Picture 1: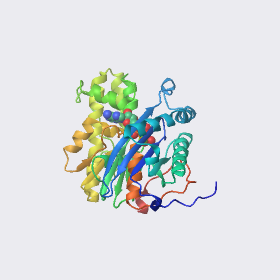
Picture 2: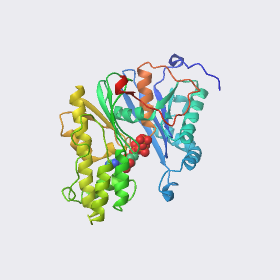
Picture 3: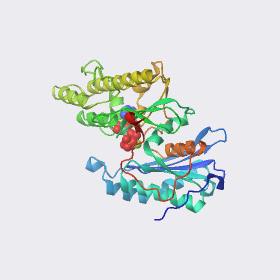
Picture 4: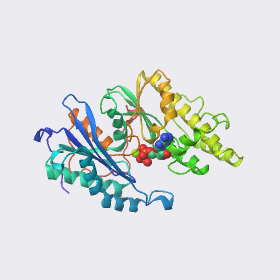
Length: 347
Ligand SMILES: Nc1ncnc2c1ncn2[C@@H]1O[C@H](COP(=O)(O)OP(=O)(O)OP(=O)(O)O)[C@@H](O)[C@H]1O
Ligand SMILES: [Mg+2]
């Protein structure tokens, strides 16, 4: 496909932004209203969570792509209905271009481009992690500088955001992502899937002192994360007969303390007073309570915006539009691997 010149935002005065995320196994479509002041309001957020993968114990990429194709029209219709809009009301479109499963990403990306082209409105190819971060803009305006901790099924990334649109990777996990550790330990303890909510629920009935977990990467100077040690300790405790709810309570407390302590050290080192915490694990009540007990101002996404969704992509699109970023070319491709940040050494 030849390069298509970007559409100018001045073609229309967009205020209603459609957001689409099909990066993995959720078909998400959301609509966000952007006011001239820059404040935003989520008008709709509809998600189809694919069940087809359950029997395989993991996401099957080709099945995910096919199901996105089958569902996206229906979810788009539901989102417009929830917002009380028709498609002609949409003034800009944002769709995730990466990172994610390429076949799955392509469905939402092509669909989004098609809608933008048909309506002759600006199109923004969005970064999935920037979407997770901007999910918190549903609660309050994000004003750089701040730290952003993305804790999801595939990422545990801590960014410094010195100015709008600039991301410096301060630390990341050396092994499992935080959500992945919740999922694996829940499976080990027979608590079901997804593991995050299952561990959280079981933890309310367990003793957090029952299983002694050692703090990972103790004494490190940097701000990295690691969950493999906690996972091994959980396996040993399980084999030694620890009760699932005790394992859940002890692991949740250890994981939360480690995430909060590392973020707090980074905030002090970088002189940041605000941290945005997002991604599926940001739904965790113990994590929210632990951040609330620090001297940081912690901002979390609103209900339904922690795990993958389309509204967070619309919020990232709204931020790009408000900041005057140029729309993307219509030949923007899907990227399985797409780093958001400048690594620390190059910043
Ligand atoms: N209450 C909770 N406590 C802890 N973890 C949770 C909770 N709710 C959801 N999670 C975890 O969040 C993860 C899913 O989050 P999300 O949808 O943001 O990740 P993903 O899209 O799969 O990964 P990525 O965004 O990195 O590609 C799962 O691992 C799930 O267990
Ligand atoms: Mg995600």
